[in-house]
Length: 210
Image (cartoon, rainbow, N blue to C red; front, side, top):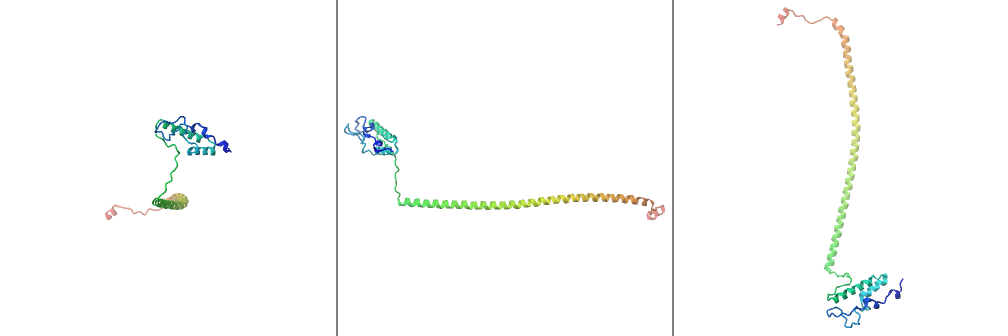
């Protein structure tokens, strides 16, 4: 922590406290009449006092160096006959609003608030619709899975029934052909020994018929 004697330098002994030479141009701003007079009064100069206060707070000499550079720039421009420039730091200007402007701002804020509320409500409704759609799709998926499982079981049962019918048809065909063959073998000797009852045609009977 710096004390006041350590932190506050003797500003009148610095180079920027006195002008390098007296200004002789009549158009130069803030021209002192006496050559021995200080161009800038250190005690009454507000920018320098602000720089000193910042130096006391931070311990950084950059604030005083910047002020010295500003003064050298002003001195050089005044020596060359140029116009003064504003080297002061720009401070924000506070503008007092009129009643109409305040009313307009309040109305705009209310409109923005209502618009934001409507936007949030739309998003909420959209989320509700999406959740209901998801639930409906999950329900449909569950029903589809159950239907798929039922159809798979039914398909397996139908395939088993088809195989059973095929085996039954093959057995019936084999039994039918086997029984027919056995019947032919059994009846063949009997048919050869039985008399023929077919009518015999002669020329007379042919004449009678025709």
